[in-house]
Image 1 (cartoon, rainbow, N blue to C red):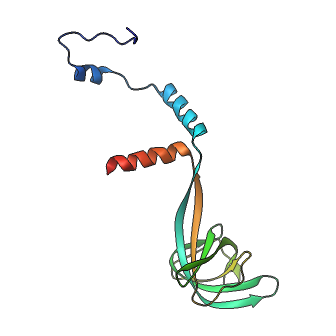
Image 2 (image 1 turned 60 degrees about the vertical axis):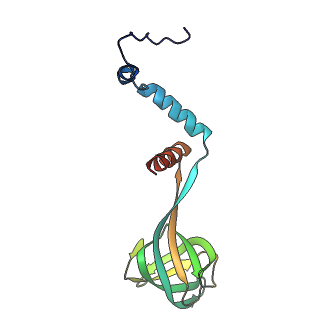
Image 3 (image 1 turned 90 degrees about the horizontal axis):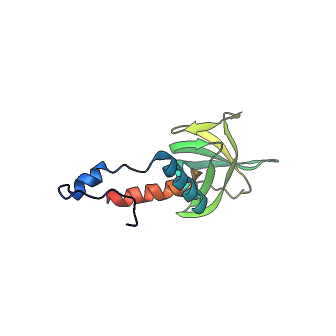
Length: 155
């Protein structure tokens, strides 16, 4: 025989043998996981944080154009990336250069509050623009493949 499996007794069924078989041991599972992580490229996953509407703009010497915004949904976070949407078209994607509330620096601004937003390398903000805040996380390729196979199995 080519395998080291115990022979089946004539009276035992294959399902009984399958139930008695042990799953992979944890060290070999870890070895395969590490091997897969090394082979698969990392996947970047975008997560939505919030949305704000530009209600006014201000020109500040040295800082450029500051957008006076009202947060309509979610949270604007200082570390978030910003997508500027005008008439349903994405105009620019950049990072926040400043986030202020009542002349004080703010780490985040929640729904229903007003704030001042500076967008790095972008000064063409207009009244009525929508600012969408999002963050990007790096997910290992093995985790993404497991999540994708789990989602396809549920369908």
